[in-house]
Amino acid sequence: MNLMQAIVNYHRSTFNPVKRSISRVNLVDITANGVIIGVFREKIFEHKSLENGECQRCKVGERLSISVIRTNRKYRFANIQHFPKDQLERVLVLVNQIAQMEIQRATIAVAV
Image 1 (tube, one colour):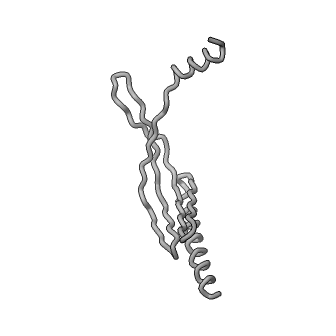
Image 2 (cartoon, helix red, strand yellow):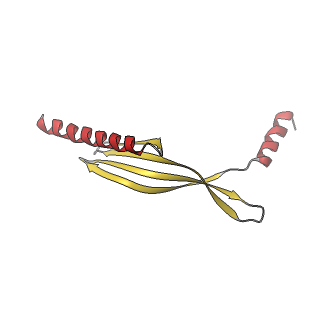
């Protein structure tokens, strides 16, 4: 066994994967002309195993997420953006702008 293989075996034996889960609360849902816009408050948890075999769930952080999904016959577009939890007002303004752009895009397409 060479030195690199020994190092790899050591790291594999000491590697402890961190299990994470996300809890989502839906704050806003907007559907405008085939576009679905959602705002979520997400809480991120880590699961740590204790010495007695039990699993402890620890809260790591919170964030806000904007999800935009546009579907058409030929394609599907999805975009997710994450923001710190204290920027709720900025997120709501951004969602309002996205919804207005989608409504304006559809009215221009109908007018042409």
